[in-house]
Structure formats: structure tokens, C-alpha cells
Amino acid sequence: AQTVTQSQPEMSVQEAETVTLSCTYDTSENNYYLFWYKQPPSRQMILVIRQEAYKQQNATENRFSVNFQKAAKSFSLKISDSQLGDTAMYFCAFMKGTYKYIFGTGTRLKVLA
Amino acid sequence: EAQVTQNPRYLITVTGKKLTVTCSQNMNHEYMSWYRQDPGLGLRQIYYSMNVEVTDKGDVPEGYKVSRKEKRNFPLILESPSPNQTSLYFCASSFLTGTYNEQFFGPGTRLTVL
Image (cartoon, rainbow over all chains, first blue to last red; front, side, top):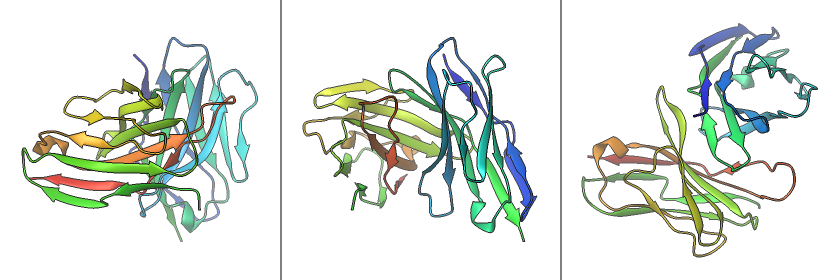
């Protein structure tokens, strides 16, 4: 069975600094998708970034980028120039072709002024 | 406005009293899904549906039922709620065509079972 592990329950970072959130997963599949979702205090789930496993190039969305290591089954999220609005819970998620999703337990990120 | 709506947003009920949480989307999405979120456990998928009359179990389907009679609606039914079903519930939807399509989430339903 697929699993997703986020080993950092809580993290903090100073405004304008860079922070990296870790995620590892376990699967025997070769084709799958990985995601990072943001959940601010409003509880709304917001897609931050996604990565297709067949793509070697790491995905980037403005200040957010991933380091995808397929062999190591690692999918970390880097947030550059952190802003107060980045304060949220971040979830890593895995999806295979059957559209079954597995989420990690989340990392609570606090950006400090 | 394209959106996923859930009702009610908050519900307090008692053990054994049947309830339904509605989910509706106006984006003509084929795929819909229900999740529950619990502290320390993240989101766990309850059921999902690839199209009308097509549903499948996620990781935690016990104690829940779903139906997909119309493309836009995907209600979650708790026939006999128990306190361990106290949770935050999310509905989500997306297209199926293409390489991948983003899931859009509803605002969540906070359920308390006493």
C-alpha cells in the first residue's frame, strides 16, 4: 500500500528566508503524481504545486519549488522569500492513475515577522 | 463562480441519528471525492466517484455511504453516526480528461457526534 510521510510536524521560518518541507512516500507504481497543498487558518485546501513522476524536471511555481528524487522517493517543498501569508498547514499528497489519493499528516509552518 | 459547495458547514448531532452532508459542484467535473481530516492524521479519502453511478472506496469507507445519481452532486451519508466520526469533512472535484486535472475543494463541514 502507498504511504506518505511528513516527518516535520511543525516548522518556523523568518520572513524573507527560505524553508524546506520534507515528504517521503512509498509506492511500487512507476506512474503517479505528487502534490503539495496549503491549508491556511480558513481551512480552505489550496493546490500549491504538482509533479508528474515521469517528468525529471522539478516543478516550480513562483516562490515555490520542489526537489523530486524519484529513486529516493522524496518530494520536498522549498518556499523562497517566505511571507506572512505562507503561514499554514502544508500537506504532501500522492495520486496514482486510479485517482485514489493518499495524504501525509501535514507540516504546520509559521512565518515569523 | 466555479465552486464546490457543502452543506451544512457545521453540524452537531447525536449517536445513531442518520445524517447527510451534501456536496455540489458547478464545473461539470466527472470526478468527485470525500475526505475526512483529523489532527495528526492528515486527510484520508473516504469514497470517490469517477462518474455518475460509479463509486469506489477510499482508505476509510467504514460507516459511510455515498451515491452519485447526478453528475453535480455527491452526498455523504452517515446511516448511524458514532463519536469516532467526529471530524472535518471535505468534498472535492476535478475533471478526468487530460494528463491531470486539479482537484477543487469545498469549504469543509465540521461534524460533531455526541
